[in-house]
Length: 257
Figure 1 (cartoon, rainbow, N blue to C red):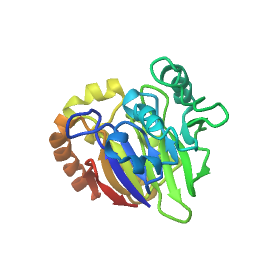
Figure 2 (cartoon, one colour):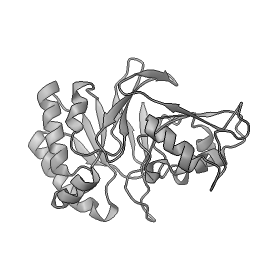
Figure 3 (cartoon, rainbow, N blue to C red):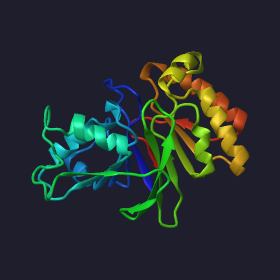
Figure 4 (cartoon, rainbow, N blue to C red):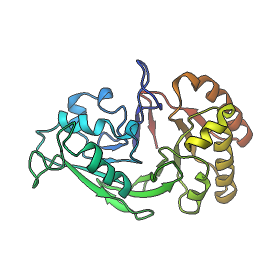
């Protein structure tokens, strides 16, 4: 299973994109900086999407993907927490500012099919076993555990704050793509906005090591662009303390899980 990082940051600049990942060219995880990283042919290859929560920087390019591939003749299957599905229907796909792709080109064959996903309820999608894993954030949010049949698993947390440790009661991923938005000196802001710092991530990883006896390969995502160097320095210390393999994601990175 290959994970391609299309967007690795929390904000858009000339050189950074909002969060978006692509598994094996067919399964998208979040839709922040999605379409700007892909050719039209690559966009047509996406058959399903997993969204972590309703914040705009994680759902924006669902609209552009649906528009760019409008005449594909197939529906894009989109799975998300029920709260996200509800807000997509009322705020993003309501037809007010953009076409409502849940009924176009026709209600019988819309470009976008929305599906609410229940916590810790695995299902099969495109040959993968996919499990929604609730995360602590300012709005209802879920991470996604994805694994091919008989293969290694990847957990993408999406946005999450303190409380990530609760997930270890249910999952033990082989590969972890985890948010780390702010450096430790901005811990108060991280707590207020329900995000992680390297120190908070260290606590969560230490809990995982204590519970499971080992740590997965870790890649940090969702950094504030101008703070990446500071976050990276602190994550190197975390890696040394825990004896962990921790790296920083960049746009275009490809990782084999």
